[in-house]
Image (cartoon, rainbow over the protein chains, first blue to last red):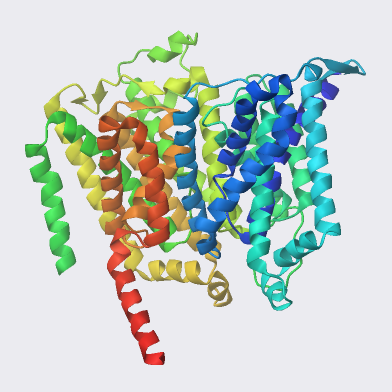
Amino acid sequence: MGTLNQLVIGASIGAVLLLAALGLTFTFGQMGVINMAHGEFIMAGAYTAYVLQPLAGDQAVLVALPVAFAVGGVLGLILERLIIRRFYGRPLDTLLLTFGISLILQQAARDIFGAPNVQVDAPGWLTGGVDLAGVRIAYNRLFILVLAIGCVVAISLYLSKLRQGRRMRAVMQNRQLAAVSGVATGRVDQATFFIGSGLAGVAGVALTLIGPVGPTFGTAYIVDAFLVVVAGGLGQLKGAVIAAFVLGVLNSFVEFWTANGASFAKVVVFAVIIAFLQVRPQGMFVLKSRALT
Amino acid sequence: MRNRAVFAVAAILLLVVAPLVLSPFRLDLLGKYLCYAIVAVGISLAWGRGGMLTLGQGVFFGLGGYAMGMHLKLQDGELPDFMSWSGVEELPLLWKPFANPVFALAMVIVLPVLVATLLGLLVFRQRVRGAYFAVLSQALAAAFVILLIGQQGLTGGTNGLTNFQFFFGLDLYEDADRRILYLVTALVLGASYLSVRQLVRSRYGQLLVAIRDGEDRVRFLGYDPALVKTVAFAVSAGLAGIAGALFVPLVGLLSPANLGIVASLELLVGVAIGGRYSLAGAVAGALLFNYAKTIFSEQWPDGWLYVQGALFVAVMVWAPRGLAGLSHQFRDALSSRRKVEVQA
């Protein structure tokens, strides 16, 4: 019973991590851009739901999903066009650069929405939960899980069925070869950044269901999301899914087993990832390549 | 020759002029900046020379700082104040050895070096580097801060360690004694600058730069890059530890907010602004950045984050080598223009 309960909590932590990490794994994997502002795109998505609340009432979350995708995507696109495009091939510099952007966005949020946290009300049909084998699963957690699965399915369909998605995979696997085969890599980069940042917006909306929204809201998730990408392997959808759920479940179990667990959970997760990298230094799945690493 | 003159002028300014001219309050602030400059020397070695972008330098700063803070808390022989607030009645086992000054001073360096060596060997040996390493070091900072906050009874939680009265015989409430403390900090900065400069100029320093620019080639020549990088990382961690230990009596406070992800990045910005490839640039950058931070926080606190963010962006876009590299960059731009003319 206890175990099953922790498993459910872990799965929902994993779903949140996955939503936050989905966009990162592509921008990081395809373009080598470490986007620290991704956390602030998550925040922008969350505030989108907050802004829509007076208009859409308690259905704000549903209405906000597509809007937040567009908001995050456009923010990402602007960032890519204006600055990041000059930085390809300098991953460490993009990290510092986008950290600067994230500071600016945080302060902007503080100036626009105020420093205190705000609350987005969950729709009525998401309160309560369902009993399963003696464990109560809250509907909002379930909704996040379904949303994460939906996003993964949509992306994998995009990557395998659509021409644009296949181009994206081509650029990810070998940029130069894709370029000489006639793929407009610059345009593909824009699309990737739009989708990746849009997913951050969606993640933000989902996160309003489990807590209040504040200006530094995104930073809490960004580090864990990066760990998911590192453990899963760059640009690997499968890797991100597995890593997110394993880390989520691990987190919830360490918190459960140790007294005062929350403070140890992060340390244990960190140690596990270092240990895992001893076996697979490039993460769970690796693109096969003959390039010298 | 010119470098030596600049160094001498800087030494006179910091050691003689500043204590005479500045008010005690400003002198304390300058001492704090000097601590950050010591960290910057280490970052310049690890990042500028070794190519290891360490986003977790706050962890080492904190390890050194807490080792010192724990000792200072135990000097009056009583149970630290925050422990009785959180219901701890007996001194925890972890704290007992820190009553010994020699042990505490040793731990200031040993703890950060040990953690850095362990992490470095585990990570660099597997050829985890670049962005991966940066992300991992940042995750370490996040985990460290959460651990510190969680162990309220052991570490003082969010408030950290405060209220220090004495520092090895110096009374921290006396201006004259504080001035001595400031001078010690300035001397430590000078010593760390000179020794790291020596290290950078040695054969080891050349090897480190070679690894930064072509790790595989150096490996094929028969060196072990993991070992070389670990040494540089450990030295930078040790320097951060020393800086943290001086920060504690100077500022009179050490809390998780001084060590977290944002604090660790702030340690790095100064280096980026001054110029990561230049030791002197890193020191100057750290001093300038923290001075600017104080000024802005006093005059226009809400604007500081905008300024800081804009600084990050501006430096990365227009001056990736920092201020110290501007002349270099200028020369490059000129020579490339000339080349174009020749081709035309």
